[in-house]
Image 1 (cartoon, rainbow, N blue to C red):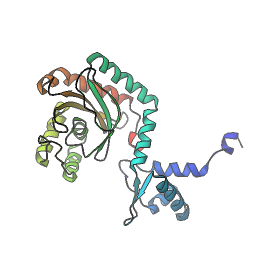
Image 2: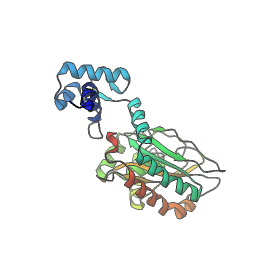
Image 3: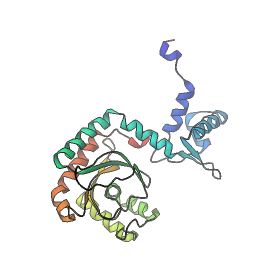
Image 4: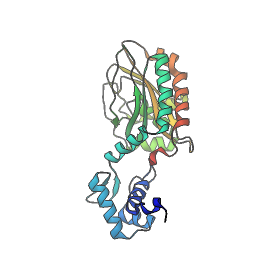
Length: 262
């Protein structure tokens, strides 16, 4: 037996295997489903699940017994993403564009109704806005969220919007589902999204979707953010419409495949 095999932890392997089962298509599982998929007996499965719940990486519904990754697990995965070589290359592109244009840039992935930011740069000597790392219920009121929605197929867009709760962050936030659907269709056609003071008063943003480099499905977005005191929407579209699309395409090529499983 090699030294590596001798120090191999089967328990850790099983715990990580459980976490790896959750992805976009299977965000929720039951204990029996996990047991059957991994070939574990129910007693062992319960012990591993309970350990992950106690550590805060999984959540278990007290009534339905359904199990799903927690926000702590999401934060952990985001931290890992920030430590990879993929992020280093993403940073190089974002830093270059930031340096050439002195603009605020946000890069985020979508997890259900939350945009999870994993890198951003702020414009120097100008008004800036700091979006939170986790922007929940923000698919309808941010350029990042609307850009991501536009990356989905038509049926998925309609399904997604139908289940959303459209919270008004400002008086300009779109809260009518048909109006939002029309906006996303326009976004899909021009390949970038616009948010005009819909998330924060005074904030203009333009965003484009990022795609999984292997599967081609939308997984997030990048945005350029500006102040209404310094720019108009028309100026932003004319000057940065092509650049935001090019930036999103370049970043998509650097994203690790199947990022939602990480």
